[in-house]
Amino acid sequence: MSLHLYLLRHGETIYSQTGSYCGRIDPELTEAGTLMAADFARAYRDLDWQAVYVSPMRRTIATAAPLCEAAGIAMQLHEGLLEIDYGEWEGLTAEIVREKYPEDYLRWLAEPAWNPPTGGETSVEIAVRSAAVVAEIQQRHPKGNVLVVSHKATIRIVLCSLLGIDLGRYRDRIDVPAASLSLVKFDVHGPLLQRLGDRSYMSEALRLRPGT
Image (cartoon, rainbow, N blue to C red; front, side, top):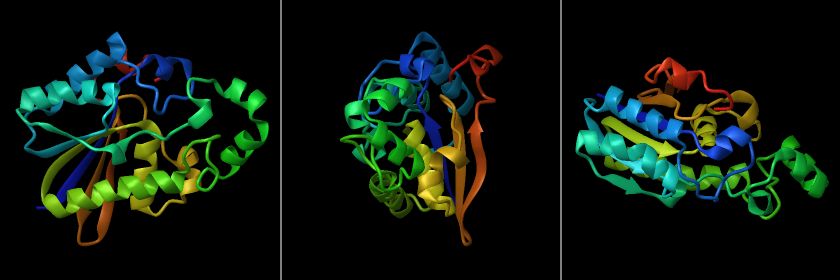
């Protein structure tokens, strides 16, 4: 049996709807986001979970909580799974950032691996801290099913790291909508992506919500 790493993005928040930058801002889930978490719990409660690793933000904790309660497993909070720190861009729209920080914004768009949002984090920094979590999971749980509940940019960067995709292209190569699930299997040949951005478990009304 191999390690199966399930990567779940948190459910919808108000920032998922507005498109404003939300990294270390700590919003609650919207009503729809709460329903997404409940749908996930119903669909995956009977899987034999070895562990659940969660970013210590309200939106990720709230997304993981229904599954943990249904499966009878405690979540483990890990700061390595936090979302990108957007620094001075937190809570702003792309339009406002482009006006206030034009040079930083263009550099970040061109090469986010090494150019951070103003006062924030690079893709490389996120890759380093999240890789430490993945390494811990592989060491502690070499077999079985492990759930990671994290954030949009962080999950995309984790997947780029595991699959050998340029970290500077994480926005161009990987898409993970709100509450979507991706699955990576670790075997003798290394990480194998078996599922990406899957939301088939949730109701059609939730899947079709705009902006998620």
